[in-house]
Image 1 (cartoon, rainbow, N blue to C red):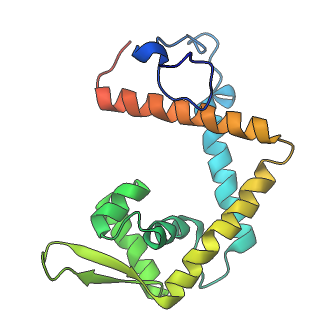
Image 2 (cartoon, helix red, strand yellow):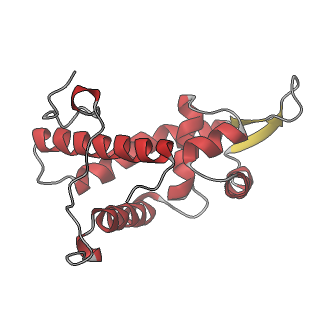
Length: 178
């Protein structure tokens, strides 16, 4: 049970569905004040910063860091799992893996027990690159959090977790409520 005041708690108070407040209306809506727009701009800027500061020719690009990291920490081992974990469709994941393979960072290996399954393995160079991911991304994200206190950082993460839980609940419902 929760009192709903802890920003790190993502569950609705007393297990009830949360009723949305009309923070936005058609009359007062401004795209540049929308949380979605701001989050997209932050992600875009973060991607650009990573590309400018840590990506060199021949090295992984920002979109390639995520699958490398997921493979390295064991969050995925097959093409299908990796696509799901990275939020990409199979075609986009195939193209991304083509580029990672061309850089010598991973290889696809067909499963001997199920020919339909393609496993992904990091090469030694891929493991080395994946080990750098947390160091690079931590540095960039800490720069983006300059001026925040530890408490504010924890609150922000709690708020984002709550929004993510809301998004997942809405998507799981699959209905369009007006």
